Length: 236
Figure 1 (cartoon, rainbow, N blue to C red):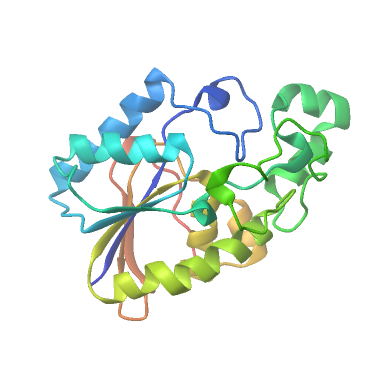
Figure 2 (cartoon, helix red, strand yellow):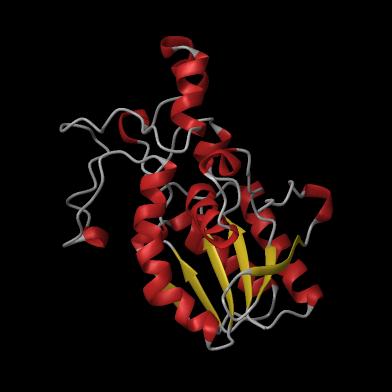
């Protein structure tokens, strides 16, 4: 039975500062590092043997995978990095403080941008300091200038179908260390959740979500390893 472990990166510096991060490459805080290590310790305690890791090209996810693997005694596991597992692109909100943005645009509007399924924030301005088009990590890619969760799923799903799902079908146990919204996109895909149902799904930082899958890659059982920091599991 294939096993998938979803691990949201530990707290980042911009999580701490309550800023819209998206594709900006900020690092983990000391608390985020501790969360990543705890995730790895829980994986080891559970006796999970990881065959391969997939992660984004952003430091906070990559370092979360490294710290977790080290704590689990599995640093040698092969790792694949791909930008399609990046966090959702927050467009023109990138870098802004969430509380200040709510004061400027109204809490209801910011809630729509943050939590709706298919309404993206305003696009990134052409002269923004957060223009990633010249970053060599994205050479040759058709980059977004803003994303909703729906369009995040639109880029995650082809990568899932072509690169991740076949590995799971071969029987490997995979760890995906990524971001709140790219992981929510995978959860929506796995559980076939409606646009409304996925809005209420929140994935806590640094808490491994272990999912047992059938041969069709449908969840048969799922649980967070740290029950004290768990959030409600999705309901199909």
